Image (cartoon, rainbow, N blue to C red; front, side, top):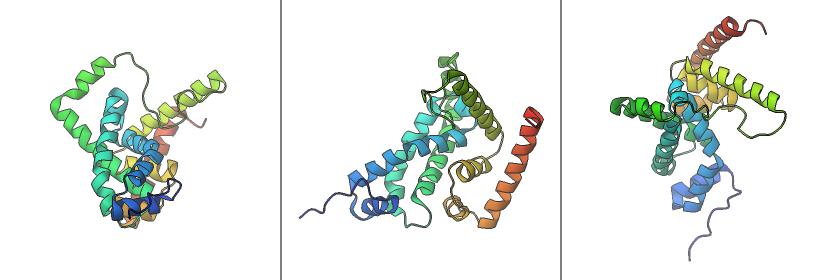
Length: 207
């Protein structure tokens, strides 16, 4: 008799185990669907300024991350939160896509295709979220300014700051997902935050 398919309401750990132990396609689909937004945000942050110039890179990175997660989640042993692990996979996929795009010259071609297109997958409030149009514009502009500051950081600091401060990933999870000592994560975060504060004060002042 076939085992019952995974419950889509199950927590991440249970869904990851269902995929790792029984290749439950429903469990895998639930996990990816649940964290698709996180995958896109992690890829967007890892790509830095390139994501703003070439929006399709984010789509490419997420697609590649989903392919990699088929094998990666099958090997996942619960060393970190599932969401943090998935975000780390998306980050690596994004960086690889960036290197591939640079090699084949696709970034320049796509930038030309998207000339004049102001839409880009932001890190903050999603488009069409409603409310006061002026306030929505201010939020969008603030989000873009923060994204621009983040883009000025190197990797892995850029992704560490975002996943820690915006997504709430724990220090332990980040250390395990990135293959770093927890003390190293703390020091990288401290230096990156100090740099961001300095840049923000230089650009925005005390406002």
